[in-house]
Image 1: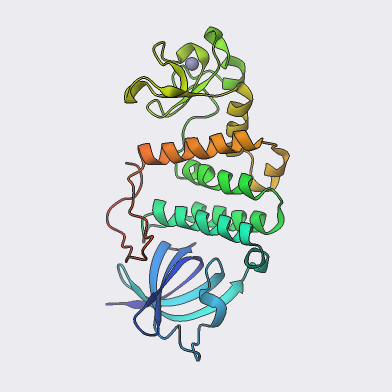
Image 2 (image 1 turned 180 degrees about the horizontal axis):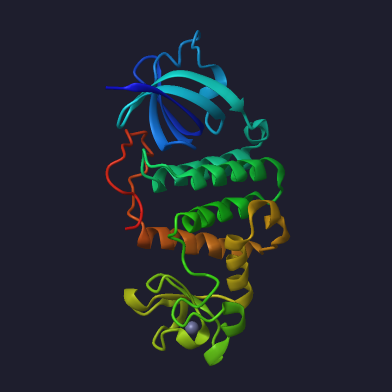
Length: 271
Ligand SMILES: [Zn+2]
C-alpha cells in the first residue's frame, strides 16, 4: 500500500541504478533522510531535469512506503551554483552530506538536521573560511541530535571551562571516555599526555584557547561564526577530536566507497 507524499529536501547522495535510473538519498524537512528511486532519470528526456543533482534543494512527490520509495515528480527550488563553481566549497559540502547520510537513520524525521544543512550550504556559498564551516557542521549536528561532547563545562565537575581550565596546574584535555573536555583538576593523574596510557585513560591535552574555540564553534550560529578565528592547528585539532569522537561513540557505518547499496539497517546513532 503506497500513497503519494510531498517533501522538500536536499539531495545528499546519488547513485546510478540499472540502465537509466538513479537512487537518491534526500534529507527532507518532513521525513528525515529518505531513499528514492528515480526511474528514467538518466534518459535525455528525463522529466526530473536538474532537480536531482547533489546538494540541490527540490520538492519531491513520491509514492511512500518503508525503505525505497518511487519518485513521481521533482521540482528544483535552489541549486547553489556558488558551490558547483568552486571545488573546495563543493567537496566540503559533499563531505558534510556524507556525514548526514552516515549519521541519520532513514525515515526518521529530523527537522533540525534539515535546517542546519541549509544553513551550512548558505554559509559555504558565501563565506571565505570553508574549513571552519566544514568543521562546525558535524559538531553542530551532533549537538542538535543531543549527542555532542561536553565542551563548555568540565565533563566531570561541571565547572565552566574557561575559568576552571588551568586548575590543578594543568590545562584542559579532551576525554572520549568522559564525553568531553576536562578541567586540569579532573584530568586523570596517570594520563601521560597525548600518547595516552592505555585506552581507558586516553586524554588529549589542549590549550585553554583551543578549548574555548571549540566551545564557541558549537555555540555560535552559522551567521555569526565568522567572528571565530581558529588557527589551522586548532582546526586540525577539532577535526581530530571529531573523528575520534565519532569513531568512539557512534556505530560505524560502512561508507560506500565502492558505491555499494547503502541501506538503513537499525539505528545509526546513540551507540
Ligand atoms: Zn573538572
